[in-house]
Length: 110
Image (cartoon, rainbow, N blue to C red):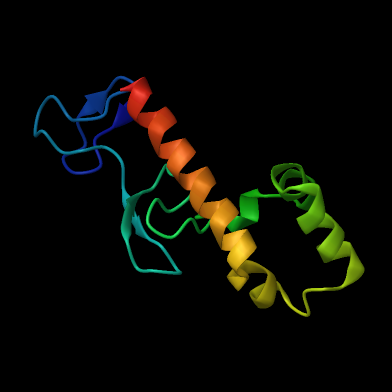
């Protein structure tokens, strides 16, 4: 059992709203890139594609998500910094596509 984040009522683990006060049970966070308010359980910002919880992504996970030509550029030193990598148009495009795919998948689960 979990407790409501607003009133403390005991709720089933999968509750999205509190039966007692009606409060939505996901906390909000703000995308560090674009400032969009997001549910705490999202992985990517649907507006800009930025990973929300970078610390949860390992280099191996990121490598598997990227096309081979981007991975090759990373290993060849084409990007001089993490900021240059993240802000590159090709990586932004990939992150946006992943965010859209994630949002579509989540909407189908509801």
